[in-house]
Length: 523
Image (spheres, one colour):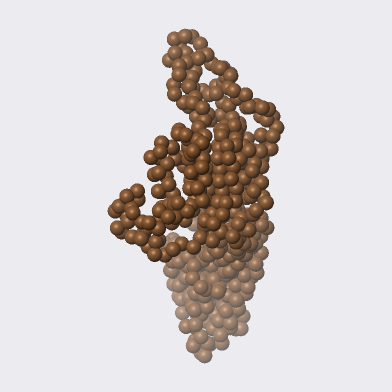
């Protein structure tokens, strides 16, 4: 038996001895309560302990009534024991952090337990004094714990919360427990109108004078400024008091294309410091993540070759390291059609980001690759680039986007989808018939009127197959138009390639540190 159990037991023994000279009935009652107390300690059952200490608290003033007005003082040492066991019962039966209770569940239950004693105060002044002391101690206990809970502080690790659209950023919710009690924390609500938020944990325990960090993962949904609202409930470990803490912070969701623009500027700066590109030297080391072509044979190992290219079997037989050599085909000409027609700013941001991501990716692979680029919408052409190397196309695209921000473009681009045609394209009959067999005159007219189609008609007169063609576009209706365009160019022998849309942070890192191209020295 632990010391914390022995002391209350010895106190009850003392009161029993104290009652012996008074009258036999008081002695017998206290002896019975002593046995009940011993049994509750041995069984360690919260309900039995509550009954025991509650009975002891309110019966002591009656059994020791001969001591007059001060007899209720003898019962006060049992009050902390009653509170402690009530707290254990509450924690076992329910979560002290849930519900709409303004005060702690332990305090609430103790207030209810005192109600049946109120009628007894009509017959005994000692019980009246004891009940007044009971409610006074309960209230005082609540106020002390509640004041300590006020010392618990919640804050974010940053004053400004920013995240890229369709990207994840991680922030921290810092919980500082400056109180003298162990506390329990539950994050009840966390939301923002322009971002999705996930927490690493919602419920946690923080030791006294301790600190806890909860990670918040934000996924940007809609470009613009919003408010992050967080509601947390804290309570002491025994459930005496609880508090609700509300936090708000401004959340800014940044368009993806802005980071892509920054990445493009870094890459262009690196290219400006690069020497004139030279043809790959024979037996030069294959570094970075160069794409493998047709297997050509083996050659001697050169420092810098990737370990994955070593031909281990032949290296053993020749007693020297040899690597697999691949014959690389020259880069094909690339034609990029970028249609900015969109219904929302987020869709426009996605289109522009995909264009920049593709140009950056291709520039890293081969800055001298020949490319044709056109940027347009339903009504006008914004930029045409004819037969230029891809690094120059990237530079011109960046210049255009810096001079014409997306907010200005958005005002001029409005995609007015025709509902009758959209309904036909989404109908069940449409799904059963291949797109290339559909004879819808209005759709054919739209393909012919498409500005990208006009640009492509001019370019394919100059660039013969094999040439790669890439379509970057947005909404549902445009997908059907470009589906028909893709079929037509494939019939002519051209290859349709997918845009290279990398994650924003990956794209930024590639532009910053990845080797630019084979045979090009970077300063």
